[in-house]
Length: 273
Image 1 (cartoon, helix red, strand yellow):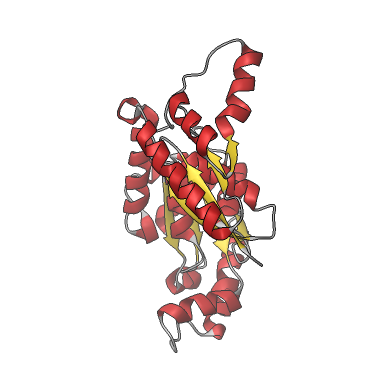
Image 2: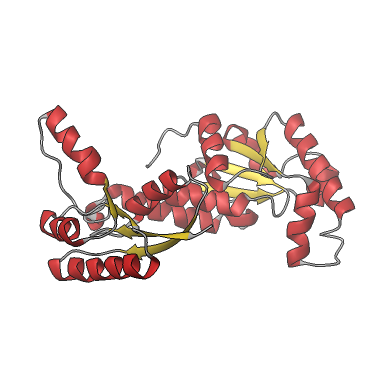
């Protein structure tokens, strides 16, 4: 199967173009080569982008796919007139029809980060990231009453990446705690978590997959052995059922799917999108 080149071009960071473009491309069974062109905010930079896109078209013998979130009309016009790729202008497709329907003009703002220094949501997001890092892997019991969600599960079940995703993507303060043999012996959650059960969500994983992950970190160890992984997962799931904690298996789920399920179940009062 031939590889198709895909450009993501924006006068901002390009995050929107890439996120939207990848969501569309996921519908097709094809191999792609991604090229990011952020901060294309002048006509000169647009001409440089056109030359790069057109060179790719000539070398590969097929039109590159170009996802654009360009706001500056002068810059966009350069791309429209000179680009030999298949241009998918997301703002033109969605923003312009909305302007007509609503009868108002959009802000035509370059990306969601253009006025970031004035954004309270941005500062809340940074605070959430700092909180999640400070409360990663049970490092701290302080200020757990401030947590929007507390993740529990055995070591290497996906707690840290999920916590950071919730903080970075949604601005939620997410703490996470590993369930360890001492907890299994007591047959209850860590004492510091008991007052916060309504905020707790559990992550589990198939023992075979857990063993594979741990083996990459500590090969030939009891920690990574399949028997130990089976024991820990069984004990953790029993504890979560006993404590009436909602939980899911992360074995076949992406971070995005895990986070979405958690948000549906926990339903924090404040969310940032």
